[in-house]
Every structure is written in structure tokens, then in C-alpha cells.
Image (cartoon, rainbow, N blue to C red; front, top):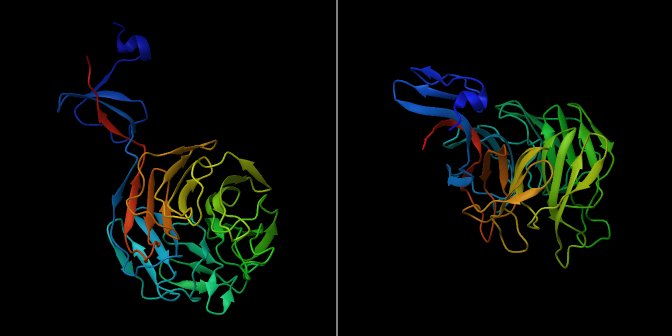
Length: 336
């Protein structure tokens, strides 16, 4: 048998308590518990129930992390401006809501709970390009709206560096109701950027302003319904078609970065809870789907720690689900 020193070139560390900041692959012997331990990936890849929204709704936005998220706007029996905060256990109503009551809009999804951005959407008066910033307690309207007002668009980035892409304008059956338009936000104003390769609405977006993934969505024409698996990657200069998803869908949600993302939910045309993981090159379907299949839901978090909330099937939902993926953790090792 080859000794550990022969493999790694070092002895196993003997300690009385686990290291405070271990590195991946590190192994040690805990003399207090008499256990051999290591720091490695623990694969969970499962959804679990979280706290319910106070206001059930669809077509809302979300951003933040699994333990510090924001849900805003959306549609119940009418558009709402309600904003709620999640602490990893429960949602709390914020005293003030959006300045522009709307649904079918987008957020800079990589924003933290204390600094978000909302843009576009549907209002009682029609599509809007209205842009609002969030400071952790209230929304402030920007004097500068999207260049192309629209709804069912997707977004990525942060409060000071965001990206808006795709979307819809009425009338539904016009030859150009679905858009390829893409715009970047510098914290003050929107600037048109090179367009998507394929016109799409109700797509999923995640990543940063200069490294974004756009995937799935609804293609033109609206009837018959045609749902997409197409994925495009944005490098800050242009959109490039990359490998497609395994499940076509519209109105799903997602989270993550350009090299490590997750998508879930949507319809095609029936509701799905299908979950797929993106590794920067290709999509892998998880055997674990959401407990509640739904579309037009909100989301936040990362590939290994995502959050899904709200949405609709035949009714609007308030329930929240939390995703735990592969994560580094201390593990007890066994020998034989």
C-alpha cells in the first residue's frame, strides 16, 4: 500500500480542532473526535421549501442571494408595486414599493440585496422603459429610461453595470413584436449594444454586464407557440451562439455567472420544474426538479445556492424553493 506521503509528498496534519479556513483537498486527523477529515465538494443538488411570499404573484423580479434576496412588482389580479425582503427563512414586506407599478419586467439579477436595478415591463398604460434603483430600503426612479420600452425582457449585471436584452412590444401578432434589442446601463443611462442573434422574449438571463448568458424563451410568431433551447453568450462586445439547453421553455428563471449557471421552471406549453446546470460550455439536466412546476417566477443566488419564488400555473404562487448544489464542506473520511 502506498503511504499518503508517497502520493502527496506530505504527512497528514494532526490537530485538536478542525482548521478554520481549510483549502480544497486538505486532509487532517482530528485528535479530539478521533476522525480523519478532509475539505471537498459535497454534492446535494436538491430543492427544499423556503418561506412563502406575503403576496402571491407572477411576472415579478428578483435579485440577491439565497439568504438575502429582494422580490418586487409582478401581477396578482392586477399589477403590484409590492417589494419584499428575504432573510433565508421568511419574507418581510418593505414599507415602500416600486415607483412604477408593473409586471413582466427585468432586474440586474447579480445585484446584492442592498443595491438593485429594475427596468422595463408592462403597466396599465402599456410597455415601459422606466428604470429604478434600489438602495436596500427604497426605490428611486431614474430620469433615463430604456431606449426601447418593452416587456418580457431579460436582464443581468448589477446596479451600476447592467444589461437588458430581448423582450416584446405590442401588437402580439405583428411581424416584429419580439425583439433582438440589447442595451447596457452604466449607472446613469442606457446605450444600445449589438443585438441578439435571434429575436426572443420571456428568456432567462444571468451573469455580468460583460459576461452574460441568455437562454431559452419564446420565439416569433406567438401562434403557434414556439419555445427555444437556444443559448447565447455575451462578451461585452457581441453575442455568440453556444450549446443549447436540454429542455425548451419560456418564462423560466435562473442564477449564476457565465461559467457556472442554473435555470429552472418555465412552460412548454405545460408547466415544468426542470432544472439544468451550465458549466460554461454545456447544459446538464439535474434529476431533481422543482417541487412546484411554474412559469414567470422570480429568482436570485448562484449555481450552488439559488432561490426561486412566486410564479404561476393556473393560479399565482407564493411559495419559495431553495436550491443547494455542490459546495465545499468538511467531510469525515473513511479508510479501508
